[in-house]
Length: 313
Image (cartoon, rainbow, N blue to C red):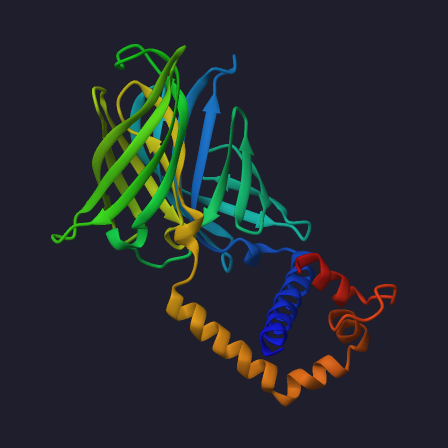
């Protein structure tokens, strides 16, 4: 019984958060886009051919309506690093406009995790950084890798490329980032089966970083990335000359969960909630919910809160 009550307590907390989040999402302002983000964006030429792959670490200051950032990009295979700054405005509809100094405006849609942006011949998405500072240990664990793009004349191969991989990122006794795993892919019309890879990575305190991956029997791939979502993802571009490729390192679901100690502590907290006078008063205030959850008549009219609970049960 206490286990079921704990579960009910957990679900009610989740529903309360969800409902309050929906209410907050109804209206946006500059404060809805504030802090530091990783921004992955690609561009094409007027014929639709990939021309640019870029990753930007961008910081928005909602009090001044300004942004600053640093971009690593491949422009037609030439790797460059540039700084940017400008102004922005977010409307109540959660859409907005950014105006880079000396550049053309870009359109913004604020999302629950960051924002989407589009510019003539270029578009992309951004995820909030989440962590104020990072180290190599921030991104340890199992990651899935996905990259797509083109290799130009001068690269080991020429044409469209795509790669996926399963990688393990660890930190050795010297504090260096180590990569091991397997990568498969396609280079033009040539399919590449999974092969072992090794490599290294380095994360700076500002949550930007670099990685090198060596495929067995193939050329080495180098990346620049921005760590986002508190280390659960890295947005990256390949930085080898004559390549235009971008992608993401995404942490495996099994590595995203909380630790056993945290799980035990959370269950203890819910047990305390379930025993509390305020929680039981809350349940008595919603007889429709308690009636349904205790096995009552399924035909009883349910409140909005109960419907939400049934959806997540």
